[in-house]
Image (cartoon, rainbow, N blue to C red; front, top):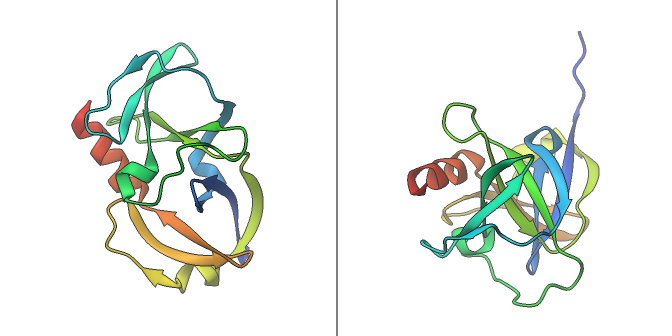
Length: 149
């Protein structure tokens, strides 16, 4: 059996930056809708969002990770729904600053990050399409949300 050298991924625009996620981690990308319930404690836990007849937590990755945050989106915001672990937190979501797009990423690029980080919720950064791109720590994000709800 031969394995591919590529990981099908999504490049996700967020405030003043971008994230890279494996496409298998993303359940759905939606147009931005109003929150059902506002939480705001901690600041990164924005509220609850109704998706497929269930309420899921909506977070601000910028707030959680300490990345710069743009108050006014440059393009039409979207909501990215992420698969979590079924026992702890089946789904959660975050807002983007535009439409994510799919790309094939060479596995070696992911094994040789440009920069490691101490920011909570981020593993490292890589350079994609000449831009610094963050690799989120989805386990940390999910655990942090589960502890707050």
